[in-house]
Length: 103
Image (cartoon, rainbow, N blue to C red):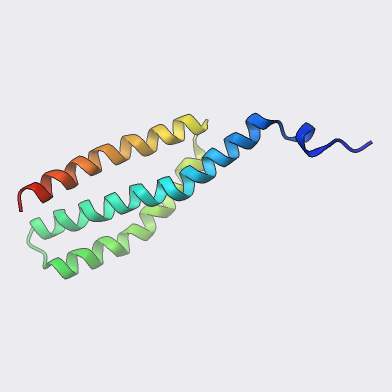
């Protein structure tokens, strides 16, 4: 007899996969976007022309997104993955806020 899908994969496993998928896509995108903004503001503050700072930060964002997405799926649990995302996003948001408040 073939077991139904719900017997093979319990609800907790399905929620874990769904949470990691959201963290690996939307969460990684949010952290990468914050990192891109913060890096471009830092580079511009260090004297790089603004257009070049944005271009350099955008090019670096591709590698950052890949690393963040892999780290989310490497985490021991979805809660830990979300914790990593929040702990990365808060300092980046604070840095962005501080650098834009001075302009």
